[in-house]
Length: 195
Image (tube, one colour):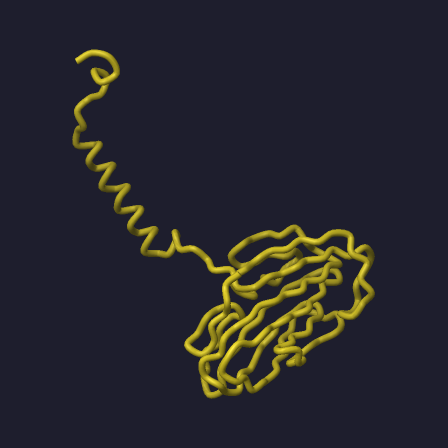
């Protein structure tokens, strides 16, 4: 043989071991969920504010806007905006977030929604306020209970961050159940629609 093909050597034991090791590593990563796609269930508009924000209904003087899609409502407590799955989002102080999503209820019942925030927020479902905290504060939880009929419902969360530390998390649970799910996370009772 001549040309390019003459430069290839017959595979030896090392090549077979490398192939087996690579296949095992890919299998373990796939089994762990590493290659799993994430369904984006919440649409978030982040609006940077010119000047300080001290309350939820402050007059908006927007300097910039950014729209993102996330799977669950889970922004870590800290000094900058970090989503649990998407990472750093380059916001620290004086911004608003408007979060929207829709979900289908399969079992009508009372549901409790838990919102943890630093600073203020308002949770609305089907245009009805469920719980809120309009001012600044360190991270704390509020909850509200609502009866949800079977069918499609719309969720809106308004949030603001003034200065210093921040964080925003949202969960829900069905009456009589102990397990809580993140807003955006599907359960046997509620399925969030994908964007």
